[in-house]
Amino acid sequence: MIGLSAGRADRVVAVGAHCDDIAIGAGGTLLTLCRARPGVRVDALVLSGGGGEREQEERAALAAFCPAADLQLTVLKLPDGRMPAHWEEAKAAVEELRERTEPDLVLAPRTDDAHQDHRGLAKLMTTAFRDHLVLRYEIVKWDGDLGRPSAYQPLTPEVAEEKVRLLQEHYPSQRHRPWYDREAFLGLARIRGIECHARYAEAFDVAKLTLNLGG
Image (cartoon, rainbow, N blue to C red):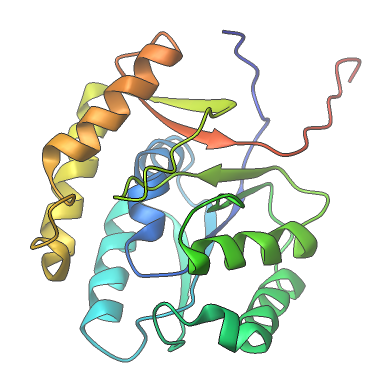
């Protein structure tokens, strides 16, 4: 396992198809990054859940996951599970996000995620953010679609525990789901930690990476 720094990340974009996607896939990474860089700008976009309980949960959760950050969050009202039928609206939202930010790091779903909403958003991000470091997070679910990630962000035990605590605290609407529990979140983090010689970690896919070894 070779460790390379991605450079200073002062501007971050984080996107999710649903409220809680960002927190589940990259909550520990956001906690780690925002604590290390107070004042970092985080532009977050969520395609569904706007105008109701889910949006309220998301706003409180991301504020907690992005401490001391300049957080700008947009939550749209696209229907859950119907993103392909609302492709133009989703595309317009991603393009608007791209026009107002030049991020150092992008956190987005995986292009091979089994959920059509996740997968569709991931493909939009691929075309909108062509020259950026895009880390594609994973979300555990019944589909069994976890793959072999190529990038890891180690998490301290304290951050891993806080991630789980914040997920349980801020998304009460999801607690009834059989996969939404401490064992699932910490279990996956422990496995990814083993893969990168850490106690815990979040894992990502990276499609393209341009090196500057002589810089």
